[in-house]
Image 1 (cartoon, rainbow, N blue to C red):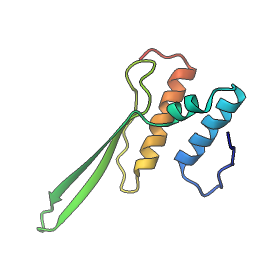
Image 2 (cartoon, rainbow, N blue to C red; image 1 turned 120 degrees about the horizontal axis):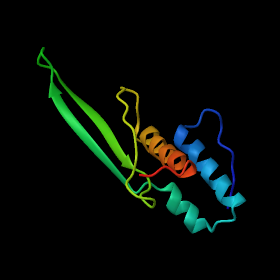
Image 3 (cartoon, rainbow, N blue to C red; image 1 turned 60 degrees about the vertical axis):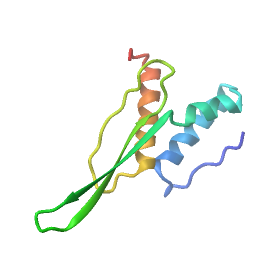
Length: 107
């Protein structure tokens, strides 16, 4: 496994993937296990076109991510903001998977 520390300007997804790889190395997990844990189970992208009161049109894009369902149903959150990206949504879902697993929360 190759551990390259992400630069400070990298996205949240790169950071969480790096931490998961570090943990996998520390636990001596096979590469395939880490790759399975890193990859989201499902990413749903929706695009909603709207017409504004002034007649102009705009399109809004959103994502729903199920990161890992090994321990049961996926738990996630929701965020509404123009600057939210697919990668940020994936990283938030991964972080939620890790937090619930570490705290052994029932899902």
